[in-house]
Amino acid sequence: MDAETKGVSPVSVDDSALLSTTIRAIRRRRGMTAREVAAAMHMPLRTYQRFEAGENRPNIDHIHRFARATRSDPHGLMTAVAIGAPEWAVWTADNQFSAILTVGLQTFNRKHGERIADLDVRAIVSAVTAMFDRLGDEIASQSEARDWIRTGQDALAETRPRPGR
Image 1 (spheres, rainbow, N blue to C red):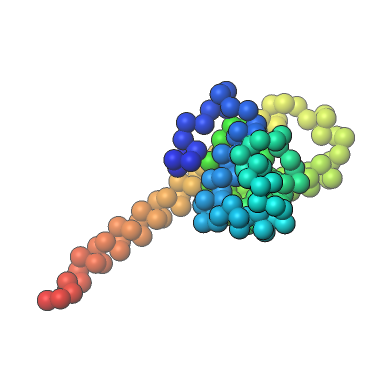
Image 2 (image 1 turned 90 degrees about the vertical axis):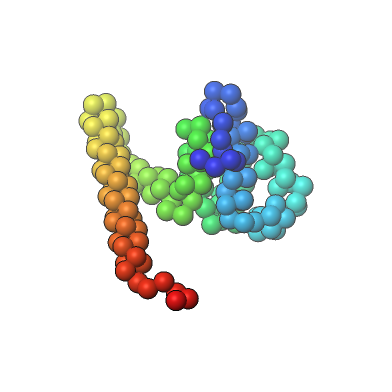
């Protein structure tokens, strides 16, 4: 979690404030100014500033326009608010995690329709838990691979002569 999202508690802030923190963090992560984002969203700077400041209720159209302007995930922005974690949108802006989940839900809904209501809660919890456990294992595996590469590169560097004699 970066300084922009530290100390944000879902209990202590409303949705507008959470969204404000989230979009400000994304904008800064992308290295964009408010003026640049406003222009990319095709809106006056002051309107964008009010949006970013959370002065109005969350606006789905603005969220989607912001996501296009910043090459981020609109579903990640909304998920960040829903789970009270602005950092979620920052961490998933590039891999489109929430968009992928939403597409999966849409596909599941189209395929199974009203039969979804017949699913037992235990089956849903089991499937979702298994999916997230598998993704957690993938994170651990990627971390192990990065550590292995870093250790190997350090060992290679130690065997090379130092530049400058």
